[in-house]
Image (cartoon, rainbow, N blue to C red; front, side, top):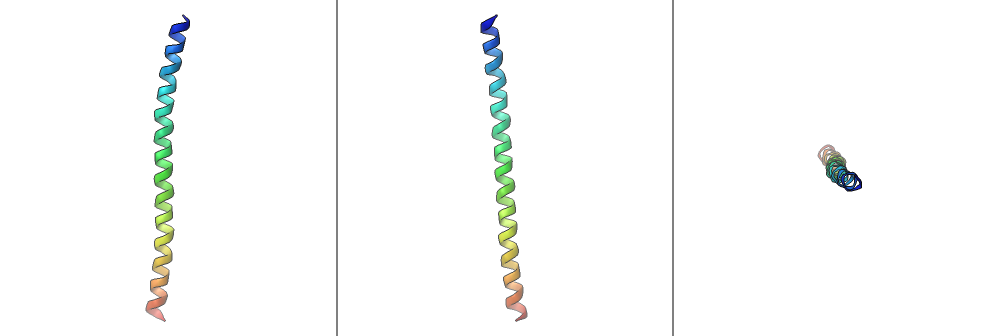
Length: 53
């Protein structure tokens, strides 16, 4: 009985590890995307100011 519970626990933990790894990757992608958007926005603003000045 105890062995089965330990195996179930290990299986559950493995599943959770996969899910948490996926979430971490997704969060990292979102952060990177937002960072690129913000830096590009600054770059575009600077370019527009250069054009119109």
